[in-house]
Length: 420
Ligand code: CS2
Image (cartoon, rainbow, N blue to C red; front, side, top):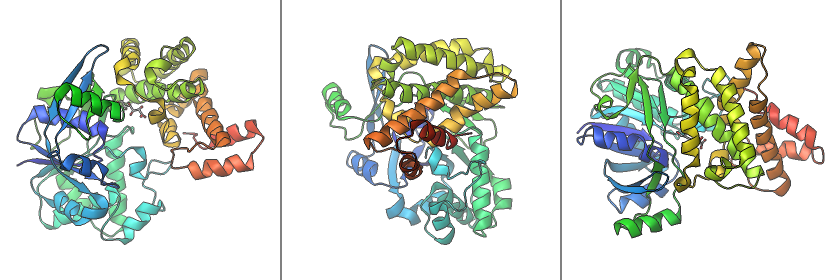
């Protein structure tokens, strides 16, 4: 049975990629990997790994039964089984949604050798990161003369496939795994753009699903009707018929990826910080606030002006469509969910807009406003003692102590943390 091994079995994967695969070819199965916790495995195992996908338009919901996963492995418990799966000849694709921080990249976009988990994985036979698992698992696959495999990053990073490939090459060199010729001949890392808005699961969603379907589902997922997936045309066969279910297989993903990262994700981040500061909880509330909507519109103009011609031309329509998606009240997408990991997201979503405009002698006040909103959001959390969900939270706390009572100095020190 052809199989996909997926790292990061969170809500995004279960609403996006899984939905494409389930329709593309009923023969394919997905093994999910949860790198840190057993929570999703435990929730899904007792229901045969199936779950309900709730698809919401502005005023209606559909309930679809998902049944494409048949196994979930948990990093700290099942390390050997994960390596077995990477070497398994039935596995034709390995996909990832491990978020920006799951790649352990430095500011230069390269694997950070001194990141604690990478340093651990270089020394250990049983890894803890996706990068460590992939490099060691691919070594096994090469030793067993395993067939070709596509490794597909589905995270919001520009040039995600190339960065993942570089990270695996660097890890395998540092660990002495000698993978270069196997990677060249048998492995492809296409760039991709993925898009579907997927809020976190709440008890209210569980109750709604129980009411609507009669099923007690421990981990349903809600999403919007909109979905997009672009993949660079470099994959090796066999793969499921993704083109037949609306995935766009294109020569160059960059125009679409940059448009999505800057216009959708950039505006999301702007709304998250400015929206929370203005007292809102959800994206649909923040986008209805006239002042925030104007800020977002100004940001979209700046962002659109930095796009390659292939996606700049449709940017107005794209922005109109985003307005409707953000305004969808059924999604109840929490601003605080988007606010996490800002120190990794803003250099990708906002800083390139400022840099591209600067290079042409233009200012970017709305994008600068988004950076300031982030810094004010972090400063407010430091003042009130609210936890900050960010890999650099300890550094922010130190800065908070150093600059206590001097808000302008704190804001400027925080901004230094997110220059692109
Ligand atoms: C959001 C994204 O949480 C975030 O940072 O901007 O998860 C966004 O909802 C998706 O990229 C939409 O495709």
